[in-house]
Amino acid sequence: MKKFLIPKGFVFPLFAALLIIAILHYSGIFPIYSVENFSPVFCPVKTVFGIQCPGCGMTRAFLSLIRGEIGNAFHFNPFSFFLFFYLLVSLTPDRFLQKLPSRAEHFAQGFLMLTIFSVVTFWVFFRIL
Image (tube, rainbow, N blue to C red):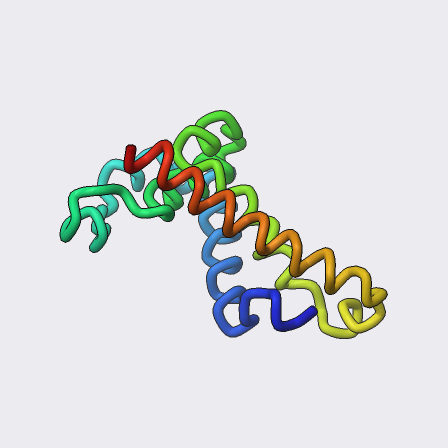
């Protein structure tokens, strides 16, 4: 199961940053709205080829998820929900993942393949064409 998850060395800092942003936003200390307009947007795929990559809009989608605006998150990038799910599952301690039945590994593999297929299909039909 571990091979289908995002490495913990990447997940912990990312999730900690998202948690800090959420705490600062909901406490009123630093609203996300003030950051959203000043964050630089650089997509190498869009710069080189002139088309949006499958990850375009992911930052705005995560910021919308933090604010609780699920519709906006879906509008910016519908696959932010899948990535958020993978982040949460990747944070699960290994001792719990080892107790899962072998069917869970097959499910994770199928879910990952379905997600990748969906991302590529969406990208080709809705972003490129």
